[in-house]
Length: 67
Image (cartoon, rainbow, N blue to C red):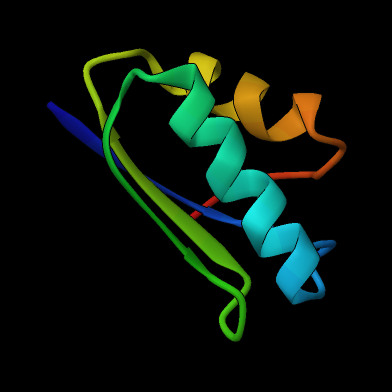
């Protein structure tokens, strides 16, 4: 299990947070995920490669930067 953290500077409101959380819920491959709107970070634990996690975030229109 790997833990990835991304800075997402274009995540700006509660709607953004809810949208990203729903995406990870629907993806179904994250053991856990946390979206911190104040810090503009997303932390995901999964067995999937980092590129797959980035794709979930990018597919929702956000720009993740690995921390």
